[in-house]
Length: 178
Image (cartoon, rainbow, N blue to C red; front, top):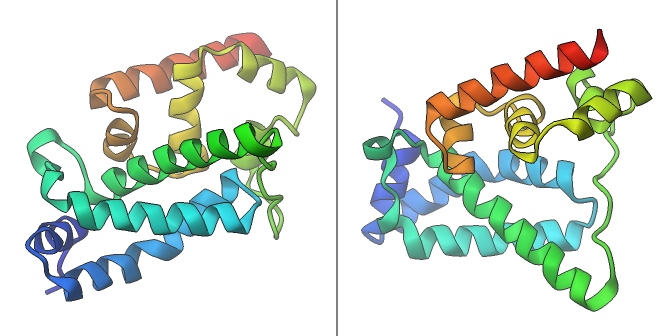
């Protein structure tokens, strides 16, 4: 029987280094990939990874998990996303705007092209016209491939709100493109 990530977080909270190492082994490749989609600077990605796992080790006891319909992966991504924003802000104060997202190595998925605004200018305009909270839901669910539950944990809103925003975003895009 395999231990799920939530259990690994709970065991890490009790100081279990082996559980923390297993959590890192399972989640680090996934997390690094998602961070690289948002930032081409490997130095920032490495810094955010380190800060994220340090925060997870220190704050594992605060993970509420199923009690708030959250997942360990969603909680971890929330920490990483916030650390990435912090890193961008630090860099912006020192050197100007953050590096652009890394271009995909292979042929990009259709959703990636759509959300990047490369398929058509009309779609790019329609995406930009969406309210930020609707774009955030699309980005988390389509680009990052997160579930409704993980998107809910990432954005700090109820699952029903995530579903409503996703539906509303699809309707508005359809209307804008018809």
